[in-house]
Image (tube, rainbow, N blue to C red; front, top):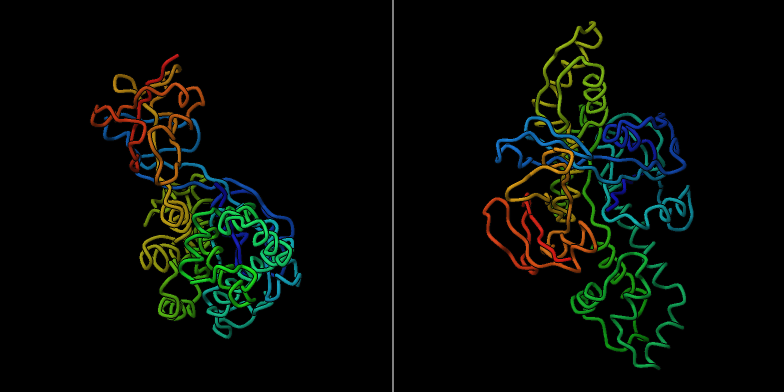
Length: 396
């Protein structure tokens, strides 16, 4: 699974990325500060199952504190884009190519309206961030359309002459974008496209492109710079204008400040929390900054929003669930670590899918699975639930 962080230049994408990963990335207040993509590891926050067993888990990857587990996911911060990116303007072609393997997108916008359409600083409130929401959809749809139209006439003619299955053929043509046959079937049905593929016009191809883009690149919007006064009114208006989008207010700078303070032993803070505890000696500048974050961000919005965005992308947009391997009589591995692993799996995963995720041999020699919480045996087609703990029984 790969989550892409996208948006125009200078809206805080790199700060958002660093706030999630604590990687040392270049951050500057001018367009195209990011040119090459930054690839790092973020974490999804889930309620751990260890407390249900009266244990403290020992994660092999990620962390767990006080029953809150953070499970690693791959994150990609790509170069910013400007209107016309699909035509190659700005760093458009590079941006789109870098996005190819992303399963979902976090669209970071400057909710305060202090960044122009070209990514240049302007007075707060002077630019309408709603335009950014619209233009990203346009860029992505036109990108998909361009890929569909590449060699389209020859492709469509071949499909008609060989009487090939249209949905299967289109899906194969776009397999690099994770398009499946079922997605194409649904799109053709919903758009009521004619059976004669040769008759599909540019308008219909654009509708098809938009439909497939929404299925393969779902978007959550991070309304960044919510700490700037003009952002609050814009946030309410954005939610009214785009009810189909999840729009989460966030302050990447505040999250980064909290994480850095926690890293340096000044505060106790867990990403996504609504409060922090001061445990170190703060100078006046640090105290003022943290007081601002507490009052104007955490108390007002419930969190900095950054962790909520990545959680929503993975658990809601993509519908992933967290599954633990474990045994009814033993929750530890050979080294004595309790519940060391936690896997993020697609929401429709079965016990057999999980067996294969653990090891190919477990899948091939699957006998049964056991729900460790209920101690009930389950079959290979049993659909798993978020936070299940599963024991796999396999033959030799």
